[in-house]
Length: 230
Image 1 (cartoon, rainbow, N blue to C red):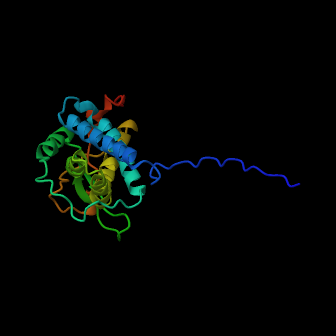
Image 2: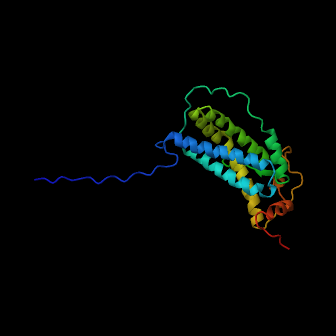
Image 3: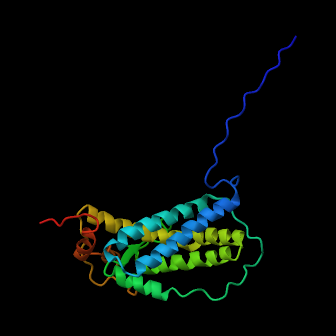
């Protein structure tokens, strides 16, 4: 007489954040919430009501946005429902946002950046945090317009595509600049004041050091709990 055997139930497999097995609606809602939260937060910071906390707050918001970008980047390729992207009309103007951020972040707005770390070594170029954030908001708003019209797959496709082609690297560069500013203040290492660094100039590599100077320490030190050293 043979004995019957009973198989023990298999342990449930963990689901990765970017797994296609997840409900796509849940994934879309989470991504759209993070993106909308970033746009609202940057817009509020640009109003200049709390200038002393602008840099650390932007550091937090850009970091959180890049989590959404990482999830989009790790996700399988998202294919839009339609071959051609539906017309959304003219893009919303971000010049006011860009200018407000430039005024708020002066004189620490300009920094140096290398666009592609895998290209043959090139001299860094001057960039602006205000330009970066405004460009990122433009990309994100474009996808959000699709999402608000119920074209969820189109929105996810655009956010994923533009993450790889533009806003991912742009936000990453801005994050490095913001993190550097906060780190210099936290470590009591004020940056040398840079004379003449501007995005409109073609400067030598020696001149392309990060900009901030003693003003940065004076303006950001208090909200970050740093006391000036004598």
